[in-house]
Image (cartoon, rainbow, N blue to C red; front, side):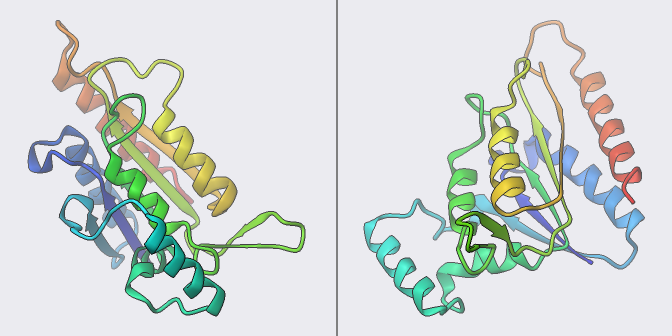
Length: 198
């Protein structure tokens, strides 16, 4: 089993989101002995940038030719080949850091992660049967986790990954909150979520 950990935890080792991701990966490795975990640290990807007119033109040309071995498609190829995806990103401005949005743009490649059918609708080409989204928020997430909602729409409807779940901790910067207890609760929930998988 190939597990892809997309690390969008921009604050590095001090990231509370990253701490939860490490707990989830530990539980995943216990559940699936021998699985291969590949970590992609978005903050270290120097060529991860928004698509612009020049790159879009080249991308369209390569897609039309079916030439997907070009380096610009490496994120899409890596994502398409994973059996399980863990995406960790803090809850920033009701969504996630811009690098995560850039990454999602780069993996949405017709012919690699999805294709359009005769009905004009997208059909997923990814191997992954499951995506786990992990986040933390300084304030309350309330009833709209826009970051997860976007990931769920893109990866569930367009890429057609069958199971997409999220676990997070919120109110971590609210005065008087027991931050350690909230993080411990989220970690317990993450571990229980992984253990419940078929």
